[in-house]
Length: 142
Image 1 (tube, rainbow, N blue to C red):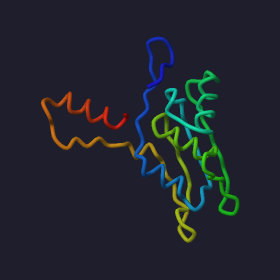
Image 2: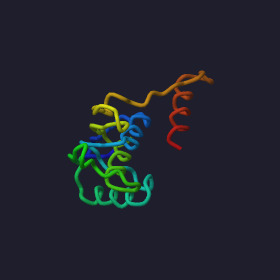
Image 3: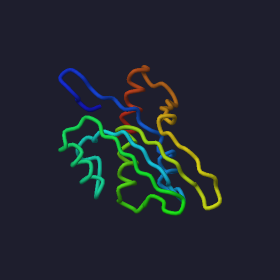
Image 4: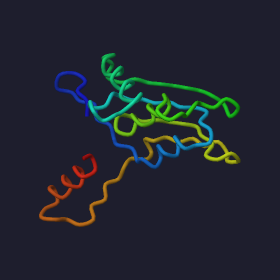
């Protein structure tokens, strides 16, 4: 949750990590669109941290990115690079859409992370529902 204006907040749904890993581990990424905001300080490392800091310093409440490649000239998915940073920041701070080819012989496939929210599974209720949900969420983010 990021403060946008006095008395308003921007809330993003956390995305299921598996769908982001499919983008990052794809054989080819031909298109990437992301709508993200910056994260809370201290949650990123390397280039991703520098990129996130620059987004915060820029002062925009939300930022959109579009990158287009092709099967012959796919988007570069190097470790600690731009594509990885954008996808990772979208996990808790926005959403991403991508066109990927998961393996060399697979067909192109469109992925929209907004269709894959992280689901909270509460195995059993301890004491009361509110404290159980609170503790389950706290365990995920810490």
